[in-house]
Amino acid sequence: MPSKLIDNWGRRMDYLRVAVTDRCNLRCRYCMPQEKMIWAPRSEILSWEEMERLCSLFIRLGVEKIRITGGEPFVRKGLMGFLRRIRLISKNLSIGITTNGVLTGDYLPELKEIGGISLNFSLDSLHRETFQQITKRDDFGRTREAIQQALEFGFRTKINMVIQPGMNDGEITEFAGLTKDRDIVVRFIEPMPFNGKHGDGLTEMSGREIFRVLEKKYCLESLGPNKSAIAALYQIRGFRGKIGIINGYTRSFCDKCSRLRLSARGGLRTCLYGVNVLDLKEMLRNGCDDPEIEAAIRSVVARRFKDGHEAEKARRNSRFESMSAIGG
Ligand code: SAM
Image 1 (cartoon, rainbow, N blue to C red):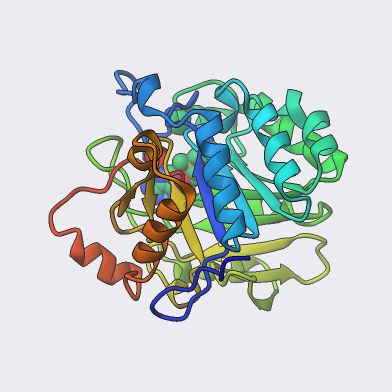
Image 2 (tube, rainbow, N blue to C red):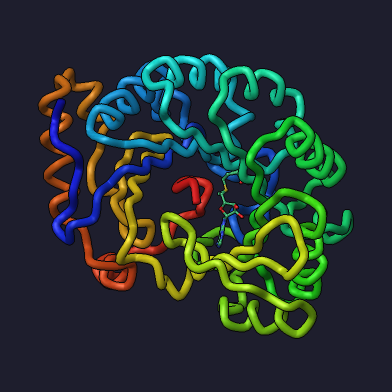
């Protein structure tokens, strides 16, 4: 068994996020433009076999959790077969899927059968018109339905809401109210500067301000940070579910960061705020064997930035891409 992946700051890398496509069926205003989005050509996207080979290698190197993201994972044909094969590699692997929920409902029975899967739904409004203004699509009903069904199927379920002041910040307490009688985690996310040259700019709202809005209405009990320290967790007294605040912009969680990100084009990123540091597609297509790929991965893991602020400084003037390319 090869030794685990440990970075130059002593952090164990056991979490891989895989963007299986850069395409999406929504056009969230802070993420991508409504029209004329330029997608990567098919040949530039890793095939399912290539992704499977890399996942298998990362699992051998100690990755215990794989999050499937995108773009929207469910728009790519063959996702279910890929998940089944990943499950065969390791029955203990924890698999998470981040989805906008529009197409997810139809796949819930099969996802349940595969097993060990949790679902994170991105939902920025509980009102149809605001949902449409943010996503530029009229799919509110399908997303809400999918979340309800996921809970009925017994999936571990989270809702992620990106706070956009002036657009949906008035809904913070309403979202928190969803945790009253549902076994769900509702997470509020600080908007991040990942709109690159696309989408509308976001006005900041800090985790602190989000907390203040919540504590005005509810009695919050702190549950401390979650396992990966990315969210500060709370529970409203007497409520069933939990609330999380993710300081994505402030970046208060970097010292515990265990995440690697694989883009649909095969780029490996060791920090969300940095740039791709390894082209795994090129290595695969040039016929590199597993030990060569492993050595390249170890070498970039051994050179991680201490935190997202350092990584961002090192990008110099290069612009942040859309999250749809990075996978969130
Ligand atoms: N399509 C899937 C979805 O909607 O969940 C997965 C991909 S999406 C890029 C992943 C997450 O990134 C979503 O929750 C989305 O809201 C979030 N996101 C995109 N741009 C963001 C930004 N600028 N700031 C904070 N979160 C962002």
